[in-house]
Image (cartoon, rainbow over all chains, first blue to last red; front, side, top):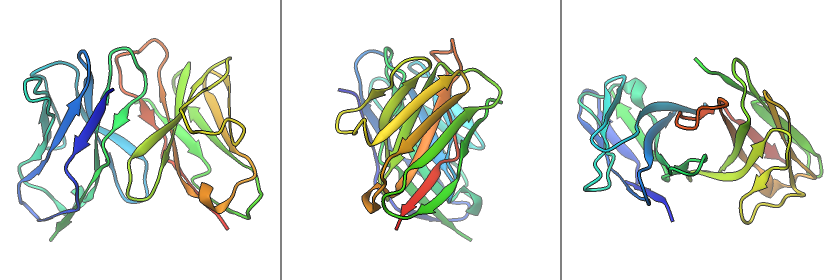
Length: 112
Length: 117
């Protein structure tokens, strides 16, 4: 079945450091891929998405490219800020299904 | 943009109490809504898919009689945790997708933190 694997955290970085959170997936067909962010005490927010191979999703300085050859959708940001501290979830949605399948989440802490 | 409102955001109650959580799509109609549960330090787990006007579809291992779902209108789904016990304490999140937008992301509520004493 479909599944998502993302790097375990927590990840602790200094402000302005480069961020990579790895995400790989297993799926049949051509799923859509998402990154969601959960700030402390809040619900999930969609951060970015990609619906087909080689698509690049981007938002708020974050980027992720849909790589079908490596079944990956790694999240990157060139210079993190303290306000980026949150839990990040990678997710996929298969072609024929409406629900999302999530990774376990990666907690990011950015220190000033 | 599309907004999903979830209420209450936080509830504390005694063991044995039934708790109702509402999920509303404020500016769109949602034929399908999803209910998730988030355990500490773990990811979201889909509990059930709520379909307007019909019975909800529950994931394996989720007790239908324990977690009652009603989706009576295109903008409202409710989750009732019946006779709640401490092990039901968790973070519950709903999501909704606008009708006729199968390829668009779901929109999430802010979640309800349920604490059973």
